[in-house]
Length: 160
Image (tube, rainbow, N blue to C red):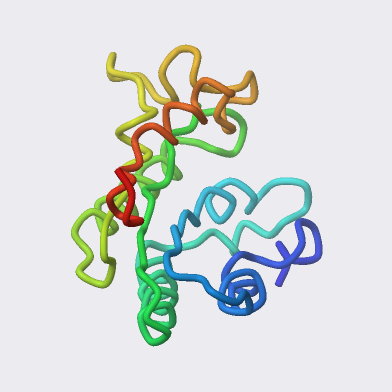
């Protein structure tokens, strides 16, 4: 409730309209969770709104079930890495890793797109690889976005 007043409707609340309300959808990529980790405790959003891995798994599985009920392929994307800046601290990084671990092993998705693996640094430090993040440490740069796009197997959508 607190987050909605500050940041608008959550992805799960907009899902019916943004995805299921569209005609002809055959595939959907679910990439949700970054804001659920980053917003609580910031700009007046209550810290108590910080998502738990269990609540995250329940929500994502529910979305996948709704997609599959309409014969829409449900693809999950892992939560991309972030720099440890401000309220995004070591605890939130642990939660992000736990949620990504769940995504990678969840049977409710038709495929998993590992955006975390595609973007993360390979030197053991937190955040995205050099050149893949904007200065905020949160959003992918143009290069990061292109890297994500190139990592998605087009065969998942019937292409080459």
